[in-house]
Length: 173
Length: 173
Image (cartoon, rainbow over all chains, first blue to last red; front, side, top):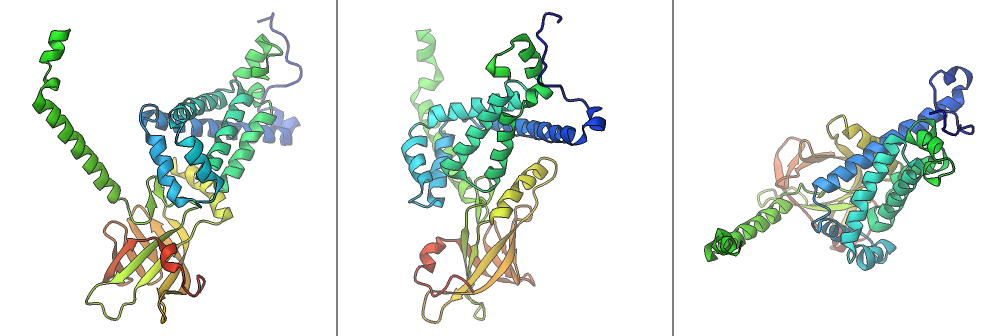
């Protein structure tokens, strides 16, 4: 352990920092709590996809086709679904199921956290473009953005150890 | 291996026929289950937050004093859509709660078409399988339409309300 490079820029989250830096600690708790909730959300979402047979059935295609009549025919979402999502539903199903799993595990463990946050944000944007937009996605997108902008995996998570072992590696920043 | 394959019961004519029949039965039962979806709901539960639904309630033959009603369930507003994040979190730990939505009630107009007569709050409940609005409730299973004294008035079916409202005098009461 003594060979590991020191991490001078990010100090870990500690409960006793509340005494000296209450607002900063509160902010970190807020980010970490949301990260774990998000991680659980994506983990359960991916498990549902695997259990629901997304990888080997046309479930995504059926879901999208059921959504089409509910959308404004002139909207971009309809074009997106008809021209892109339905024709390529197989690779998209795989991308969603495995991508959600990676995002969920990453956020829960604090592993490649900023990238996991980017994946989470990517899926939110795709849901919105793909005809499932509602205002809650704005809030969820903002929360996902928090995981990209803050080094929360180095406050608490595997990124802290890995960044020490592989200093400069952008996966664990 | 070949001998095993050739003698396999799956390759007999009757087995193939049984497999086809079984598949047909499965498809029919799936279609029947799809039809059993509660009135004004989506495959995933309640109507999606950005979706609106219409139910046409027509009186039974003997109910001469009852007027037909077109029920227009509105989409959730911006803040209600954001509030669904909390509802989702709550659903992880507690049963699904009824959803309240704004509805517009239409009566047949004097000159044809539909006349908006009232705007009210309706409770959409998957638990009791009811849609309740002031003065009446609908059984979401069989579409039976009751007054608030539980007397049957008629039957409601999901309709494409936009088509019915085209050419009507007003959408707002």
